Image (cartoon, rainbow, N blue to C red; front, side):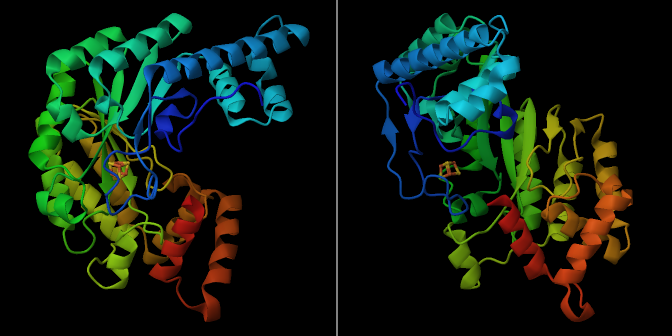
Length: 379
Ligand code: SF4
């Protein structure tokens, strides 16, 4: 394919339809025990000229897609022909641009793990070029590490905001220092707070990701309460949750094997999330937009929706044990999205069949089987 550009492996769920522009490659830290995304891959800064070349290529791809629209009789409109592009041009970059245009062509996500590590003037130059090349852009977001944000001057972050950086997504994971250290996150609770406050102060919207289950059976209480404490101090615009998945590609897997870390069950993780929400006293939007969360319907604006969010947990916890198992299996095989799905006859029948297959000899579906379903579904 003559026209293509570099794409990184991940973006937040909320950026599923964003144009992806890779400003750095891989993760400069790359040591967190629970993360496999960039393991074995070397971090690289990219020259600004190279990033601009990728942006330019994305524009050429956009023009080619519009040209195809004209030729197909759609008058330059791209939504109608995005499906055609997916079929005839088997290239990931074309696919990304087509999907982005189909969704309105307004949001951009800068990859990979920590864009703030770039020199501020270089990142400003990239953002300005992006906006000149695509004047319709309304939102530019990226991932960053708290430690790097803590080292940036607020004035530099203001400069990035004025250039067009709208939102930063940070993997907070936990606010409990011994857990951060154990997981080799490379950041302290104090640095999380400093980095988060710097971003909020600059006017850039901030999303903090909490990793549910990270405390395991050993540290879940402190994980919940200390994470709430740190979030209360930061008061980010968004708190987003995702749930720990332990597969054999992450270093934490061997800690489980050798007995140093005991993974929590779905039900224990919900108890942890309940404690977290109970201790939150901030004004954030609480979002559960990751597929691996058991109850994605725990969402709302704090503080006013706290009771509503806790009621969702309570509703699950007061179900009879077999109903809870049914829901967990349904979630982990991708058949249920919310608790009301338990009363959808067709979905329910399908989940019952799965449970019959899994619970050999009429025995209960055990925790190991549910973990395996979750890992198989997510990976
Ligand atoms: S900083 Fe983020 S991307 Fe890098 S290893 Fe840790 S979790 Fe993974």
